[in-house]
Every structure is written in structure tokens, then in C-alpha cells.
Amino acid sequence: MKTIRMFHIDECKYCDFARQAIAELREENPEYQNIEIEMINEEKHPEIAENYDYWSVPSLFIDHDKIFEAALFMPYETVKEGVKLAFEKALETETEMPDDELFMKKAIELSVKAVEHGNEPFGAVLVKDGEIVFTNENQIYTMHDPTFHGEAGLIHRFCAEKGITDLRDYTLYSSCEPCFMCSGAMVWVKLGRLVYGASNIELENIIGNEGCNCSRIVFENSFWKPKVTAGVLREQAIEVLRDYFGNHEKG
Image (cartoon, rainbow, N blue to C red; front, side):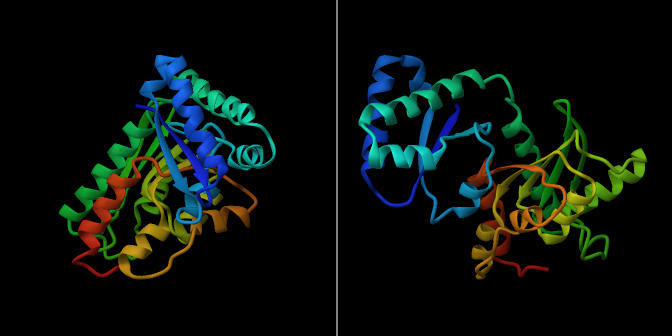
């Protein structure tokens, strides 16, 4: 089922307008009933609100600034048109990029296997033209290398095996937002797109720290900026992190 994520700061007229529009549009078009709506407070999840592609898939994002302004200064019908546009885009893109959740599921499976193999719960999958070309899991303990993270390890091995240094045609799926080091590696190989599940803020909150949106900080201050889609299978990714770091310290 496709999900539309609608951002809001606090409960306001925008939220009332959006909910009313959702209900009316579902009555008008039964196809919309198969699209899930998730209202997200962007103050609680800034890493998602700040890191998204417009019409991101598998989750679809409304341009929250425009819709928010519409709710404050324009009539209800204007907001309804914006919500309808989001519904239509969700239907149009249903088959364009259907595999984000599939590839993220694989990355999360690798994060579970990493723990089984004695390492920390992080997995990464590299995809080109809709096909998995390489996978890796965190191996910091078994390799006795604190830098052998899921993403950095994948980049090192894949580039070495293929003899390439440019990944602009590839998408990397990571079960958790890459750290500063791994984000930097993505800049140097000119990664085309990054998709991650749990955010670094969510990871650090589990551990007891504040955290930050580290991939955004790196990309915004670098010569190369991969496209980013955040929050894919987020809850499943967080569950794996919570299960592990509830009993282990971060290495």
C-alpha cells in the first residue's frame, strides 16, 4: 500500500482542511482508499521533512510549505486540489519505482544478520537499474576494523572489485542513516541516490544521545549531493536497532 506523508508543525487549520479533503476525495474516488495517509509532525521528525525527494517513492510527500500557506491564506478548495494532486501522483508512481521497500527490506535483513555474525545491526544494498549488484553488512568486530561500516565497506569492496570510482548511476539502500564517514564516502564516489530507513537522530535517541541529521550536513557542505529518500520501512529498521542497542553499547 502506498503511503502519503503529510507534514505539519502543530494542529492547525491546515490539518483540518487536509483531513476533510482526504475524506471527501476517498468518497469521490474509491481508488484513493488504497492509499494510506500518515500525518507527521515535522518538529518531531526533522530528518524526514528535510531529506525527501518531491514525490518520493514509496512514500509520497506533499509540498508542505505550499499546502500550509494555502491552509492559512487560501480557501479550502485550494487545499483539496493539493491533496488530490498527491493522491493522483501516488497512483501514477505506483509502478515507477516499486522496489524501494523491497530493497530496504533486504538491507534490514542484512542488519539482522550482522548481529548474528557478531557485529552491529547495519546493512547496505547497492542497486543499479532495478537489480541488486552488491550487499554488505557491518563488520567492525569480525574484521577488527571500526571503520568497516555497512555503507563504507560496501563502497570499498564494490569499487575495488569493479575497478570504478563513480556511482552516479547507483542507489544505495541503508537500514540506518549513514554516519559522517559513510556519507563522505558517498560524496567521493558521486553516489546517485541514498535511501535509508531509521535516521541517525532516532538511532542516537535509542542510545541516549541527541544525534543529528549527519548525511544532510555532509551533503549540504559538499561538491556532490546525492538524492535522498528517508524513512523507508522506518519502523522495522528502528525495531532492529532498539532490540540490539537495548543490550549493547555503541562500538
